[in-house]
Image (cartoon, rainbow, N blue to C red; front, side, top):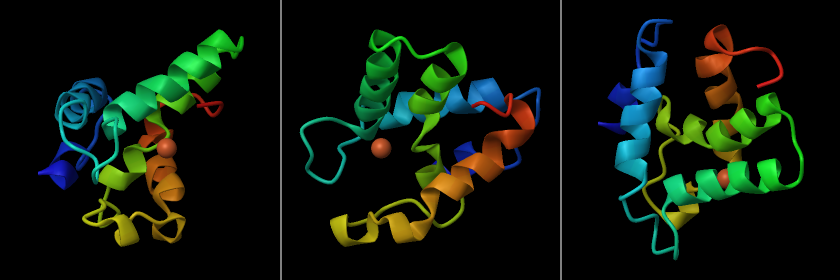
Length: 103
Ligand SMILES: [Fe+2]
């Protein structure tokens, strides 16, 4: 299901898909961590805003882990939650056509 949320993105559906993803990841447990991955992403954006970052960086902080929900990057165990999964690049590839380069 996570994969389908960010599959076949278009300029018409990208925001709706991101909203739908956040609805899932705000309530899904995150490998036993005290916050969900959605809460973690919101925390990153809040920290960026608090520290005076511009809109692009705040958006980038908010979206920084969406790559885990693209292709086969979605974690299933703590050991699968690894930078080697290249979630940063997967997320950038998925969203680049729809956001300014700064994001
Ligand atoms: Fe993160």
